[in-house]
Image (cartoon, rainbow, N blue to C red):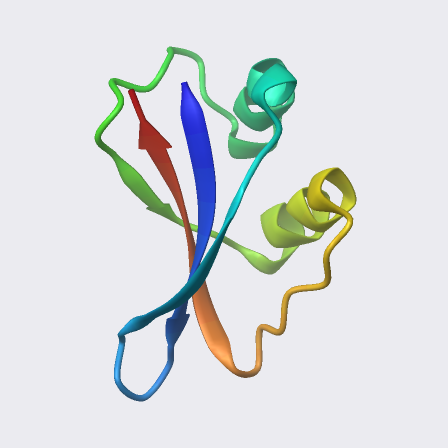
Length: 76
C-alpha cells in the first residue's frame, strides 16, 4: 500500500503538496491510525495533531497545522 500525507490550503481547500511515506512503514501507519483492518486502497483520512506528529517522525519533516489541513490517503 502506498500512503501519502496530503496538505490542503485551509482557505481554498486545494492540495498544496504531498509527502509519500516510506514503503516499509505499513504496520506503523496502522498503529498510528488505530486501524484493526487493512485499508482498501482508495480512502482518505483526516489527521489529528497527534497523528501528524507521529508522521513527522516517520518523514523527518515538519508539518504546519496552522496553514494546512492534513489527510492521509491509502493508495492501493
